[in-house]
Image 1 (cartoon, one colour):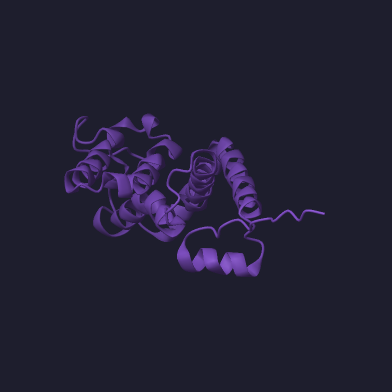
Image 2: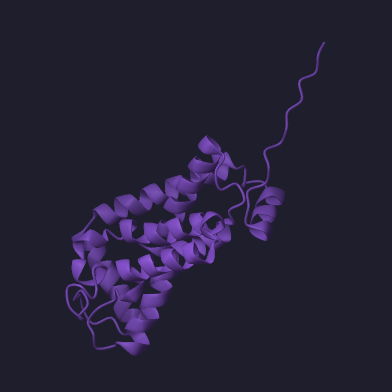
Length: 187
């Protein structure tokens, strides 16, 4: 999934949770976006600069090991409740990338020290070409990205972010503005 898709799906999911349960109302959508693309922010530079000859693009950020370590560190620090939404966003990346199909990386190092082999992606252009090839090979990704755009549109409409003052507040605070209160006038 592309970074935009990760964010769109995660924001829509968070919005549903907030609206239906009232949980995570203090979540900062900017941090949620960062958390959900953090595995790629970790691994893509590794592919370009650290492991350019690995013929892989999924490294530590896409492992259960890193996910488990983050959850353990946050739990041990006593901040699980306040960081739960961000941990869920981070871990959701593994689901969105369908990592169950890349067990060499997902279960690293339990399946050996190597990474899931893909192709040479040590430059941004090679990475772009690889993603274009994936889209051709797996058209379902286009469907998921299109659904992500629809979810983003729904989120914008649901939170009334098409109004500049509401969008500005959302971008400034990371939280959707409170819905306007309607007052019924008795006649």
